Amino acid sequence: MHDQSEDRAGEQQASPARVAQIRANLAAVREEIAAAARAANRDPAEITLIAVTKTYPASDVRVLAELGVRDVGENRDQEAAPKARATAGLGLRWHFIGQLQTNKAVSVAEYADYVHSVDRARLVWALSKAAVRYDKELTCLVQVDLGNAGPMDDDTAARGGAHPDQIPALAQAIAEAPGLKIGGLMAVAPLGADPAPAFERLHGLAMSLRSEHPSATMISAGMSGDMRQAVAAGATHVRIGSAILGIRG
Image 1 (cartoon, one colour):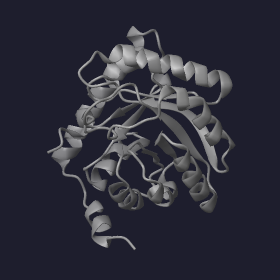
Image 2 (cartoon, helix red, strand yellow; image 1 turned 90 degrees about the horizontal axis):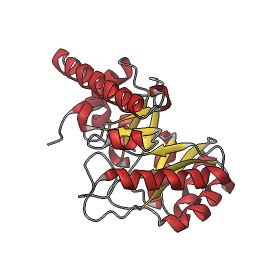
Image 3 (cartoon, one colour; image 1 turned 60 degrees about the horizontal axis):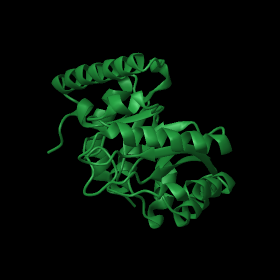
Image 4 (cartoon, helix red, strand yellow; image 1 turned 30 degrees about the vertical axis):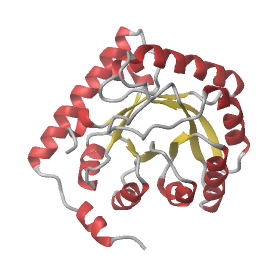
């Protein structure tokens, strides 16, 4: 059972002022991504924007959908599940980007299309069992620890991730697991340092993974504060929250 009040709250419509704010912010972010892509001699079409809607209502998700956003990210199942139900039918692709406990795998697999935060074998098996239960294919990314210390930016997961040496085994486990597909890698740049070297390292790890799993083409990197560096280093998916929806209280 879930809290119906959460769904009802999600049915409220965004105010005209809120719609205008999101439209302007989204346009600015799209242009920044495009500019970063051009500067790196990349096609902007290669980069997917994931709008991270953590702490914001389903009404904002609807506005984003109306503005052409198709990829939405969340990092807490207790918030994501009712929001996904409240916005069913909008053709959205849901990306779970937060740290995931194995006992939440069944819930997440029901609405998510992508899980960016696979960092251990037990989670692979839990997600596989859940995906089979729902008769769906769930694309999984291995989250890589690039040396983070301390709490993460509000746009993404809490600290976590597998050691780079664990990538091959985890990727193979995902590839072999029923109901799962290996999508690529995800990482968060270390705090308090230039993110560019970390993202370049992630790109190198992703190329190694792709040599063994050619379809694992996703590189999920970059948030509101470091999207330019991520795009320059080859990110295919950027996870943007506050730059689109505002600073969270």
